[in-house]
Length: 247
Image (cartoon, rainbow, N blue to C red; front, side, top):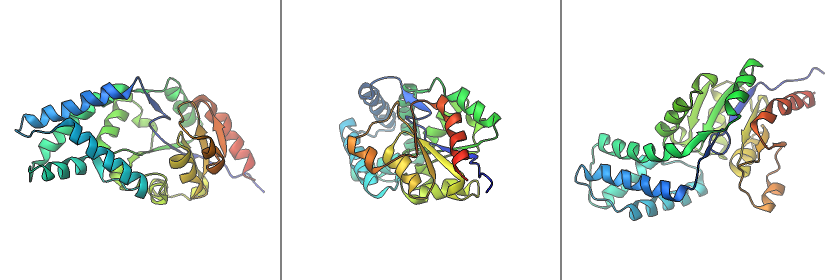
């Protein structure tokens, strides 16, 4: 029987193609303050501690149902609860942009990311991104700033798609961009639950990037990746192994 090669690769973003420069605690404090300062220009007073507490409630919920209601929704609903009804959309967007202008400065592309995706494209691989993220515009701006958009067929986020990995619908939405079946794609990511188990639930092959991975010991047994590599530069030979085994 002829080998069936895999030529579609779905990437995670944070912890896979990019990583944080440093500790998030001071960055998030500055970001929350930037958001509050932006709102204050429109006579809206928001305690940054209240905002961050509401975000944690949002995080807890989305980790249970894998549905993304977005930072925009959280901020709008919080302001309503505080008595600021019908805040203009440009005001909300400007506040979020102020927040993300701070957080984006803490992200950087992995050293081996550009070389890897260039080699993959030169070897006729089709590339896509699906990122669990609370704001689509934030991710799209990061991709533009990194200068890598041209290498990808699409850049999707849970904010734009509603579903978060590992929800099966998140992967189905991504695969629909290529009009292919799950068996024709490989998921590459650092999260055992979101990326690896999510892919395996749809019979996609999975490659676990371990260098930024955070996990508990028992998760390796529960969420078994098909392949594990430390860095992105190991992807090409690993993909060649996958093609060999698909007989």
